[in-house]
Image 1: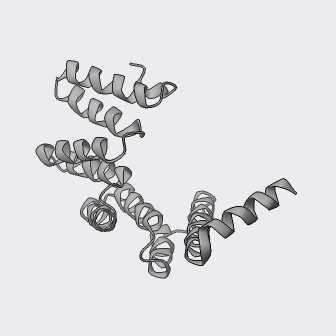
Image 2: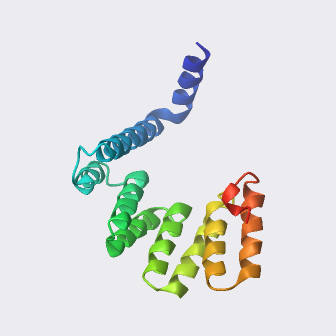
Image 3: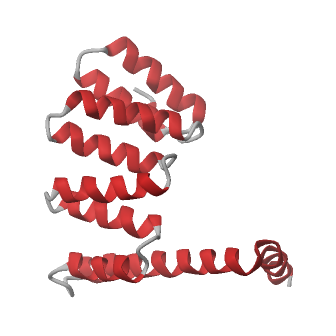
Length: 168
């Protein structure tokens, strides 16, 4: 009963538009999970086709576009992945995961100055997320800037003390 009451209070607070956004998010998450499960089970030979259908159905949904970008990146279609991350950032410049993923693509393409700038934008975009400073730290460590990297690992741990990857 208390869970239902909490749900009713949340629904009342969100209003119709907020409820619609929440439901849309749940639908996209469920569809993405189904795509992953079926692909891992070998039931789909072309997961990208199904992910594109999700994005076509929900073109403004950040999570759907991020999922498409990650899928394109894993398929080696880096330029298309970057375009998806840039679409997310055009709508939400504070989307730290999009900045981080864009930086990863830029780094893989050998565009190191642009990659560094994107990693730095990711760090600034979300002061609570430990992943961007950690990833920028890895980037700088690979470039031989160990002191800067150590400071960024400490920042990641400040943001989330139990972030195990940053215990280097």
